[in-house]
Image (tube, rainbow, N blue to C red; front, top):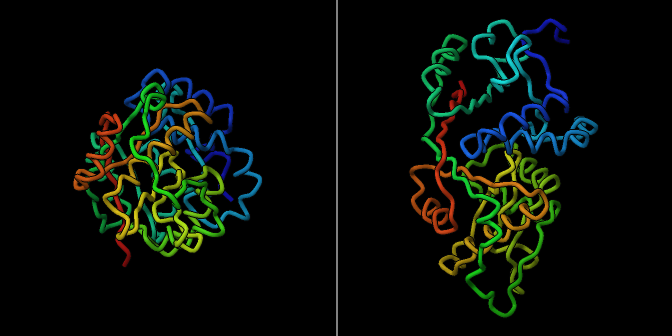
Length: 277
């Protein structure tokens, strides 16, 4: 059990509310931080009452702030204080750190003192779309006869989504399952697909639509664009928020899709991934 004097202090719901109030003044640049914290705030009671049942470590998360940090800085974890905390297991074989691009050198310098062999992943754009733009999105295709759009089911559809995800790992099934259970998702189905979607996406723990995929035989029909627009509208109606997405610089097709819907790049981030030894 960690000491009550640990340099990191867990954020309760009241502190998260204060962070949201501060971050709101810095939108859209801080849309990633705002929506990620909002997601945890929104599900706070459900997550904390069911931690023993959560099987995805990416959903079994908590927010911490520097015990002596200034609230107005919205620093959830102080880089300078990491050496004093017992809450971070630097020897864990799976360890990912996300940071805005402008802080990469600072973060990289700190973590390399903790352990070696960090891999810097390709830069991703933080693509933002306002709720006003979402409200005006127009569905520009008509689904053919025998094809419909419907909510995803975590028990029926998690396996196919996990198996087709580019970033699949040993725990991806539970990440997908709990993303659907907490935030929902949509699929496009046809009569001959045996109850499985032919195109899908679910909203993840960062509160951004993810896992977007269309099976190869159904591509170039506009399904992905149609489904992303539909999911954005669903989330906006339910939560009344601007939305965002992560899009790699290397993924030209995804960048084009997001730009067609009205997304704009407002920031960039990268991941530091600990290589497994």
